[in-house]
Image (cartoon, rainbow, N blue to C red; front, top):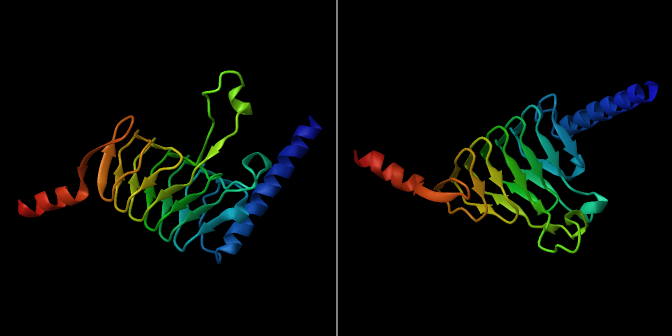
Amino acid sequence: MFFRFFRFLRWSFKDAYTRFRIQERFGGHEVLAATVRIVSPHRLDCGDGVYIDHGAYLHCGDCEWCRDQGSITIGRGSYIGPQSILFGMGGIDIGEDVMISPNVVVSSVQHPYRDTSSPMYRQPRVYEPVVIESDVYIGSNAVITPGVRIGKGAVVGAGAVVTRDVAPYAIVVGVPARPTSSRNTEAAQSSSS
């Protein structure tokens, strides 16, 4: 019982210290809510005005099992919603003024499963960077898979699973995500009315 309590205290101190160092690194600006968890914070780069909300989990790589690679970059004015998960072992680059809603998963690593002669966890992982350009909105519970680029101004609907690149200003929904319209088309229609 004592050892569990000691481990909890050690974790609590380390977590608070990590958060303090991140706040200090970004000039004292509040970039984190109280319950954010960051693995390898030295590989996280945030611009001014970034806010990472409660319960978000950011894994920035730099572990033995991810070949000591990975990073997460978040541009100025972007927002990461509560309970969102970013697996940046293959690299995640988020542009400026991006809004990521609650419970979004962005992953730049995946486990292959095609070789049935070997357990999936023993097969070499695949690392592919994810790029989310500026002024993108990602709805709640969306999943962004490795190797995807989401173009500037795009909208990803709630619950969508993005497996392919998204064109700039496109609106995509569904599983797998497919374009339904464009913000440019909708803007043209509303101005002509």
